[in-house]
Amino acid sequence: MVFENYNYMGHQSSLFVPIIHIETRHNWYGEVRYNYEDVQTISMYTGKTFSGGNKFGYTLTPLIGYSAGNFTGSSLALNNEADWKNFYFSSQSQYSFSFKKEVSNFFFTWSELGYNVSPNFFAGAALQYTWQLNTGEAEPGFVAGINFKNFSVPFYVFNPFKQGSYIVLGLNYEYDLKRKKSR
Image (cartoon, rainbow, N blue to C red; front, side):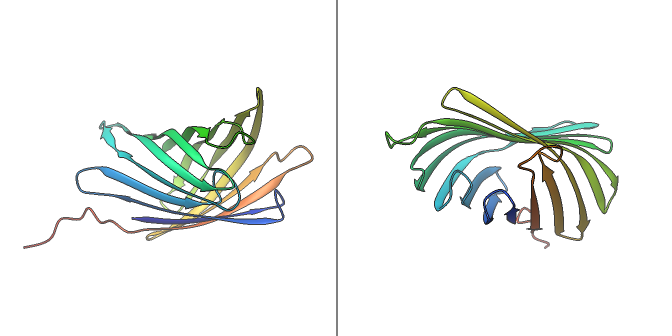
């Protein structure tokens, strides 16, 4: 089970984005998030995780979701991760279909490519990309963070070299529900 909270600062006054996701022993995945698709919107996703690899590890989690609030609709999504030595790649992508005529469908992805400098420190590049109303907006950035036991604190700067830059500060906690019970 993972509890995540991201605080956007400078993008829209200040916005908290809490996320909870859980994965069962049989790799079924569920996620609940708030303010992610839009402000004052709650979303629920479900899917199944597939993983493999030895030196090059990967996970793929296709998802289907529903959102209610300022954005009401359904989504098809894919979370994926890969790692090789100390390098990692992660991406969350979704196409969301609006149930409201006044709100358009959209595609969104958040991707990261980074390097684990040590067990407690990571850094890399990040990209948020949105396609809506036949217009795409790419927001490149940087990420750096620290890990301590079950906690992770990522720090992002998006659009760092132009007007409209903003930061995102995360505080994440992970608890392994997949541990086997000892006899």
